[in-house]
Length: 274
Image 1: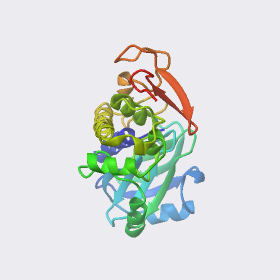
Image 2: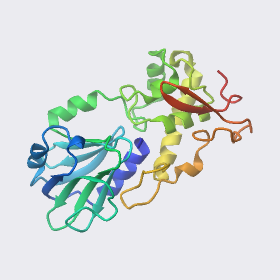
Image 3: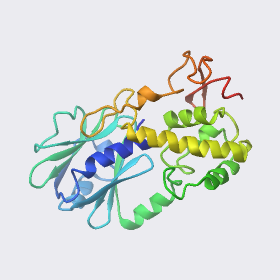
Image 4: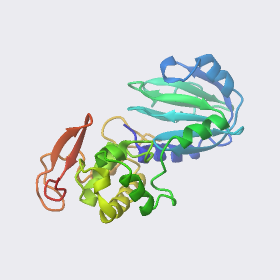
């Protein structure tokens, strides 16, 4: 599932394509990926100009000139693919929504499994929606002290807390597992038992991992691609995620896989004792 680095990579790629362009029309090919009536979704966007492209948590945010937003949750296999022609770009193999642009060109929301969702939000709706998400882990306001406060308020396993978008926005399983490896914290550790030193290590590790993943264009394991079709290269730099049975890059102990909360976690039993 695309996480913060993948959404950030897509947003940056579209930031050089969409701002200033006007939506000539919208074609909804798969109604289940759009919130609300599809005809209304298209009618409310027709004639609007894109002003910027951003991100909130795992979501790509298309900002329009009237301050409304199209929030694109990528689900498991969603992506945004720009193309020069009037129809779906050739790289879009499973187009679900097409944004036709004045002067030519089209941006397709492509989604193999169609677990993603597009929703149009007014300024007020956007404010309420955004406030329900946790802080952005790469923002200046996300300090070590704030991380400690979030951890100390929960008895949940720390990996589960990191995946909770209402506590910290944007982190998914890949980067939670990686950050915990760097911080030498077992994924099942109750968050409120980590302590000040552990919280500081985890804060540094999470920001380090996310920044490195953004620089690498995200992580491609299967379907994810940037808008220009390139794969995310961070998979070459994974230290724990998906490395079950392989030697830890720190101590050479074999990486183990455990399952809890319905998700796999990977850890070094020596570096991350329970």
